[in-house]
Structures are given as structure tokens and as C-alpha cells.
Amino acid sequence: MKIFLKGIIFVIFTLSASQSKDLKVDEKKSILFVYGGWEGHEPVKCRDLFVPWLKKQGYKVTSSPSLDSYLDEKLMNTVDLIIQIYTMSSITKDQEKMLLNAVKERGVSIAGWHGGLADAFRMNVEYQFMVGGQWVAHPGNIIDYTVNIINSKDPITRGLNDFSVHSEQYYMHVDPSNEVLAETTFNGEHAYWIEGTKMPVVWKKKYGKGKVFYTSLGHTVDVFDIPEAITIMQRGILWALGDLTD
Ligand SMILES: [Zn+2]
Picture 1 (cartoon, rainbow, N blue to C red):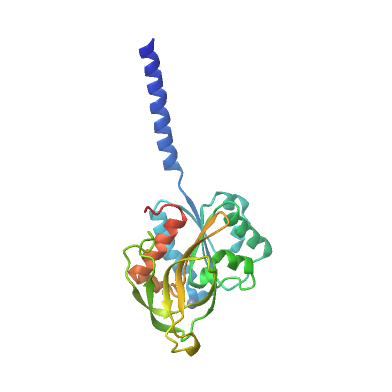
Picture 2: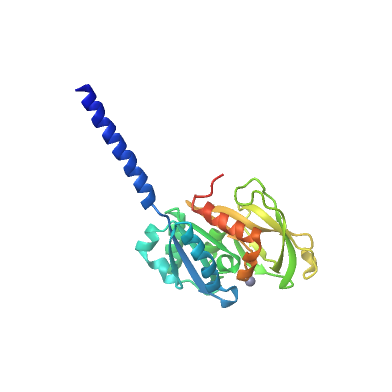
């Protein structure tokens, strides 16, 4: 009898173990990739760079050219991460409310770069409170500048060296609570009064229960040809999903 019971317990244990394994396979995280707004930031090319990579990682991706996706309750209730490249433009009250609630209350993460996240919806200060910064200038337009890694212990920037960029050097109004991982220094050539000013380029933060990841790199999609730039963005996305291992 004892042996029989042990056998049953063994069978139940093995079954439940294999079931939980199967469950993990089914638990693919889901990403909403929203693209649009000002065409100069190449939202479609960005989609074509990032979406295939996300799918290759095994994520379920919904890409949408419309902010109305934020109104899709079913979608917003199942998504784990929102990636948004949607410069300027405007967002309706309802769209903004659904987006902010998903991040703040449900703990959905949000990630993005350059103006697609931090120069979107200029009238919406609560949205900016979530992002942690708002673009205000890029003195000299397309120039050469250096990105300095200031946290080399964080898994997002670990092992990366400082690197050069030929693009817009974003001057931003930023949230002092951001956890800054990389920054750039303005040399004053194009706006003399900001000489020596250090400005965050990469940060992570929380908004309510949700994680926020941002980099000001990425004026055009070719900035992501720089190995450090694409590595930072990809690792930032994985961090936002809770999938970046230490
Ligand atoms: Zn730009």
C-alpha cells in the first residue's frame, strides 16, 4: 500500500512539474509597438528594425500605426510592454488616460527613444511626468558629440565604453529622479551659455508600478548602426520586460 501511495505521489509530482514547464512555454510576453507621428524620425524604418528582433526573441508583437490601440481594453489588459515611436502629434484625453493607467496601475512597462517618447504630445504634462523628460533643443542640429557611460555596473550599460555619435545632441528638461546610465556634455559651440552642461542620454525609472526606459539616441534609424546604441536600446527593452539577466 505504501509503495502504491508513493507511486501515486510520484506520478502527481511529475505531472505537475511537466505542466508548469509547458505553462512557461505558453507564457510569451506581449508587446505593443506603436509608431507614427513626425516622419523625420523614421517611425516605419524603426518598426522594421525592432519588430523582427523582438519576434526573434520569442515575444508576441502587435504593431500599430494608431494611438487608438491605447483604447483597446483587451489589448491593454494583456500587454507587458509598450514601445512607442510617435513624435509630436497629439493624444486624446481617453488615449492618454488608458496609456498612463496601464503603466501606473497595471505595471505595464514603456520604452522608447529620442522624440518618439520624449517629444510626443507636448501639451500633456502627466505623460511627460511618466517619461521623465521632454526635449527642448538640439543646438547645432546634426553634430559630433560623445556619449559617456556613467554607470558601468548596470546590466544595460555594463561592458560598454564611451562612444561618438553624429546626430542630434538632445537638450532636455529632465526628472531628477531618473536613474541615469549615460550622459553627454555640451561644449557651448552652438549655445555658449550651456557650455559644460551634462545632460542625461540614457535613463530608467518607475511610473507607479510600471518601468520606463528611455534613450535620447535615435534621431534617424541609422544611429542604431552604432553597436553601443543598439545594444543599449535592446538591453533597455529586455530590462523593461524583466528579462535582462544580471
Ligand atoms: Zn530628432
